[in-house]
Amino acid sequence: MIEIKGTAVTAIRDHVKANFPEKYSEWIETLPEASKDIFSGVIDSSRWYPLQEGGIIPTRKTADLFFRSNYEKGAWEGGRYSAEKGLTGIYKIFVKASSPAYIIQRATRVFSTYYQPCKMEVIDKKENAVSLKISDMPQSDVVIEHRIAGWMERALEISGAKQVRIEFPKSIVKGDEVTVFSISWES
Image (cartoon, rainbow, N blue to C red; front, top):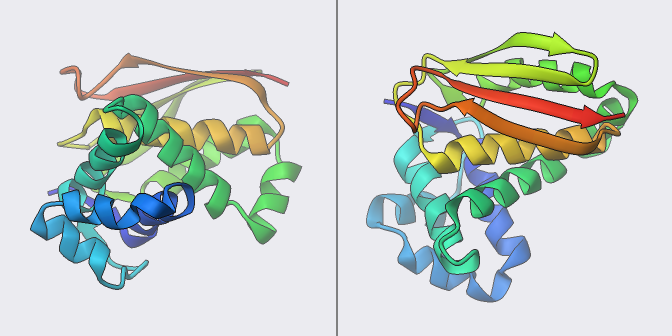
């Protein structure tokens, strides 16, 4: 079973609270009991939660309610929010002082602290481009892939990258054995 770290679960909740506060209660009510139990209680940032109930379902419900069921867009915006909030304080200073290439390479280490079991690695690197591969992830969902892409996009923007483009030449969701993020940007 794939799990998601409590810090990522908290970011999903906080995204809804910050951007759709008047609909937060409605969002909670749309969740199935297992997800509702997670989001109605105190979320322990150090704990691991089931990916389906703690990540996929609540992100899909966010997209249903606030993005006209556009799962890719809803997840992408959730990932961007997570990067914006997670890369604050000393982390934001570090990100701004680092090159986009360095930041995205660091994402490979950060990724495994949010999802388990999973592995992300750099498979190609150029001056303003990098390809990352996710493997060892027996289950995925379009919302997880797009949430990760949204996080990477915003992290790159914070580090000074412009016109960030992220494509998925391979996707576990589409039946491939791995997911590949092909990322490029302008300096």
